[in-house]
Image (cartoon, rainbow, N blue to C red; front, side):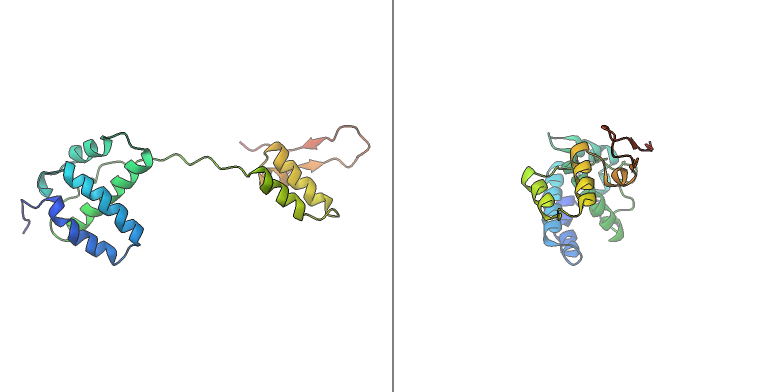
Length: 167
């Protein structure tokens, strides 16, 4: 039987106790923070919290997409637990699309790191030095650099490279 007056805040400790058995301390801490905030906003009984309430909560505040995604994941897991415990019949987040995050831009190496790489390549291994220099100077990916074919006439003033671009 579902208790119609159960509040999210009243169930937090039980959920977090279950979560502590399967998750790392940092995860539990993040869930605790997210769900405590949600409990302050979602004050209606659990069975009356709907999709619109959750969407409104997730869109409040000036927070990053990463924070919104984490909060959504916390709520989704909480509501799944509530259904599993018999506290809810359905999950209010069932139709809410996952927050999409852009992949972070890759961070480049610092100049000292680049110099350290070149310092460990023996001078006799010119092919390796050339390959790393090509990647570093042009921004080619490793696969692209490995696909470069050089003509064998090194007497030319220009070095002709042929490469098939895959798009």
